[in-house]
Image (cartoon, rainbow, N blue to C red; front, side):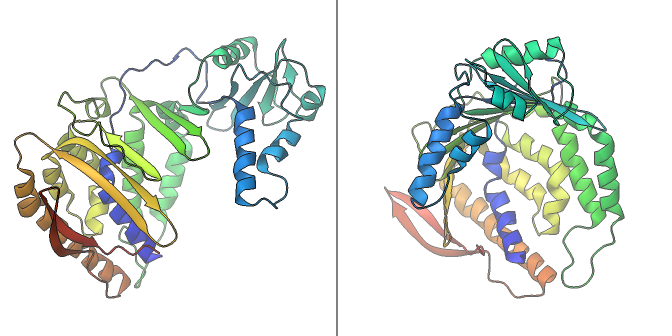
Amino acid sequence: MKKKILLLLVLSLLFLYPITGPVQKGWALNTSRPSLDLIIKIKGLDQTLALMDQLFKSRDPGAGASPGSILRGLIHGTDWIDFSRLIVIGIDTSEHDSTGQIFVPFIKPNENFRQAYHASSGPDFYILSLPTGKRSPGDSMKKVLADISKSKSKSTISVEIALSRLLTKSNSKIQESLSKMADRPEAEGSEKPPLTPHDLRKLFTGMLNQGSQIETLLVNMDLNRNNLVYEINAKAHTGSRLSTLFTKGDGETFLNAYKPQFQMNFRSRPFDFEKTFSFLEDTFGKFYEAIGVNFKHLVQISSSFSGEMAGGMSLDPKRMAFEIMYVLKPGISGQDFIESVYLPWMLDLGKNITTAMEKQTGQKMDPLFIRTRDSMIYGFKVAGIKTQTPFL
């Protein structure tokens, strides 16, 4: 377990760049929707179920009923659903309870479905209340759901979360959980974690404070035979510290032609990298210090980068492969920076993390990073460094 934790800690450092992508400041959202903290839109359910069947059979042709066929049975077929409109799930939360509605448009009524799920009927739609037995929503909510169902979506599944409002509504429960976390006794012996319960409470409080600056979080997902493609956008509250950070930079981009082909691919446009890391230090600095990472030094290193990056990562049971390209700011010599700043910092970082983990586990560990032979690729000198991160 300790080795897996170490892997996650190292990955969080290596991939902190793609995590800090630009936050959208003004894409169109319907802010007049009454009391919906979570909206899920589903497009082309019939096509998704057919794809699920294909993938299931390709993995094991002799297997039983596929998930798609089971779901079709549960909803009494799909030939009655109007797939020119979206299926919509709207959820409203409160301090003591949560309610939701599922809006299902149809081209012809399905009485078996209506009776099975106690759905209320409209002229061309059913609405299922969550939990089952809750009263049907009022006319204003029905109109909201109907309007969303008629909207267009490029994604198979789209999830819109009113994050700051959701956190505000759940504040009392969150504070109760944080209090219990801080009251837990500290662990003793060789398995003592790097952070005390009080430290963990402070960490999660900082994360929640950052999350409260996000007005709306939008997650789009598409599935095909080869890939699961997802996109995450965040709309920060106007005037919040977050809204001033991950904004699109004006600098020239260099990686547009680079198309990584991994299981997971990511890229970022130029943005104020140093300012962003300073923001993250307020919440995560103490956590990284506990595992041997000087976050202030990380902020200094980030000042040389433009924020633009691209790369990818693939995993299988035996190995992990990743490739990332970062762009330095104009005027910075890449070779000098790598040799005199970046590599010494990375090797020193590996030593500090190794020392911290040895202290926590009481076990001797191999160096996290070691220098290897340099090479030349397309006329460029490539510094050799080997990552010895425990994978399993």
